[in-house]
Length: 88
Image (cartoon, rainbow, N blue to C red; front, side, top):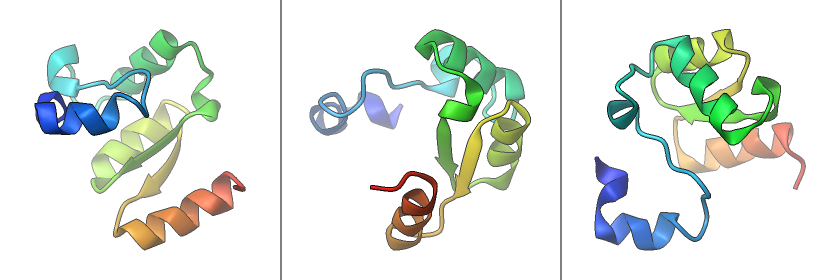
């Protein structure tokens, strides 16, 4: 899993409290239950979570679970969309 690579851990660990992997959770990202499991573990309501992905099937599953979603196209577009959802 890419996020387990030492080069990524040095960047990700200071930013994120938790990093979830569908393969480690033994569940598909296209299954809404994956997102329900994550929000339960991080003790947030689904509507308090923003999920970004480049796969529309995964976004549909996350939305079905109640998460807000953004389709990833490129960094600048995602940043603009995040600023619309979460004023910085």
